[in-house]
Length: 630
Ligand code: ADP
Image (cartoon, rainbow, N blue to C red):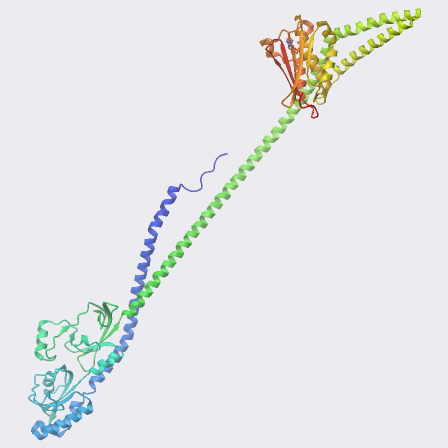
């Protein structure tokens, strides 16, 4: 049967893509996870910053208003001094009594307004009276004409100024107002306030914010470390100018330098500062969203700092979540893909199996049809064979019958001799008996009659043998070997006597599976042939020997005749082959005998014995009840 072609491709080709997939898939998945996580992080951070800046804008607005109200609540105070006559009198005519009165007045006013100090300057910028006149570092008599707030106020402008006091070294917000009398400025009233309350409030609210002044210097800050730092780059010129103005006293002005600065929108920046290691042990840098707005009525700006750490942590969490979700999705996708492949492989295998099955069924159907056809042919042949066998059998039967008749023909001389002798004897005896009866010799007549009786019996036996020989026999039957040998010897008795044969018999009285007559016929043929072959032999000898051999019985018929030459051996069992001269041989004996033996399931063969002569070996099946061994 032809082998089906393999269903799957060769393993070397199938393994390669899978190997590549296994090698490249994990790094690809990891890369994808990282990329997605990072994109999510950025997106989340951006969104967070947007939300923070919206919220921060409102906060900024709120706190800007608070800062504005805090710094503006003292605006009116310097101008109140215009209403106090003692102050204008003192400015017009300074006297110790008036100074003392105004000092007391200012002291009381300062206490009530909770400002840091209130003082009055004359037109030259010298302090005429002050609320802190009792203190050792009182401003009294000090020349503050260099102060910008004085210079603004003396010109009739509102003096607003944040600076560090040159006497006390204390920072403060200065508000100055030119005191007018009859349209002429006669002096300047100054109030110094501290704005630390704002810083404290921011700190309490954990708000990070600072206020930078017109120079970009941080004047108020929730984080003291940022105070008096510049939010803008400071050139050497600016530094020089600021130092000379003494606005910040001799304070070293440094820049507030962020590590990173990124502008997001107008007034919105992302700033990264080094972390304050004493407060924050966790981070080395801190990022803020810085939102700045102008403060009304001042050149100042309020900056609100919103830490981005929480937002970044949340963005990182979201990024991680998305990366994990991506990994999970990839894992599910790979698992689904693998399962799909397994299913499709199974389906393909099932389809291939079904196809192979169908192919097999188709072939079986074809083969069955072939077999049926050849079976039909065989049946036909068997029928023909049977018919031929039947014909052959009939022919064989005919041959057997013909052989028998031929044998009878051959034997007719000896039969005639056999029958003529007793007949002649009977005639003589019967004539003698009549005469003995006439003479009254009853005794002798009686003896003669008994002899006549024996002769008639002998003749009857001869004819009975002939009848049984000529009768058609059956393939199957049961024969006694001893009886068959006796019958054959009796049939050939005349020739046996003539030849003075020395007969050796050594076989078992077994029951053989062959018709009795047929066995007798075979034996008559074999013994008759042996007698023919031994005609020239002065001491003819015949051996009939037998034994059980391989479950069957083997009878050897051996003579010491002239034997069989090679040419004769070739044609021995051919019908009508004979070496006998004239009418003596028909050439049917061995053919018939062999076919009778074969029909009974046995065989007949000729052998050349070492001692000379010829040996025929007749093998016949035993009847089941026959003896098993001699
Ligand atoms: P027929 O006896 O009529 O010749 P057979 O078929 O019986 O026919 O024998 C064929 C031939 O086989 C004989 O003519 C003879 O030559 C040979 N043959 C048979 N038996 C013997 C034997 N015992 N010894 C020698 N030759 C034999």
